[in-house]
Amino acid sequence: MLRWTVTFIILAIVAGIFGFSGIAAGAASIAKILFFVFIVLFILSLINGKRKF
Image 1 (cartoon, rainbow, N blue to C red):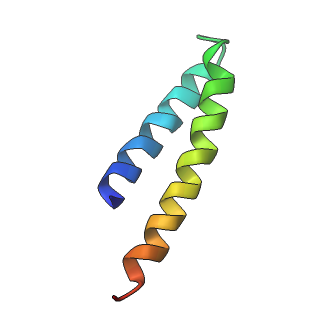
Image 2: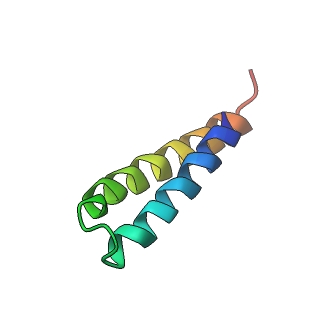
Image 3: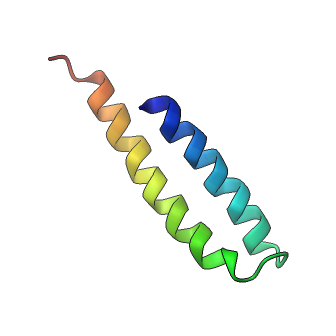
């Protein structure tokens, strides 16, 4: 799950770079949402990865 989270956060950062630079103005809001969603997922997966069952 950590691997998927890292992959999606990289995609969100790339989408953010394109969206914030004016290349695709419509993608900027989507990139912001994806960025924060995947930051939260990344932190949750780090916390769950360290927990022992």
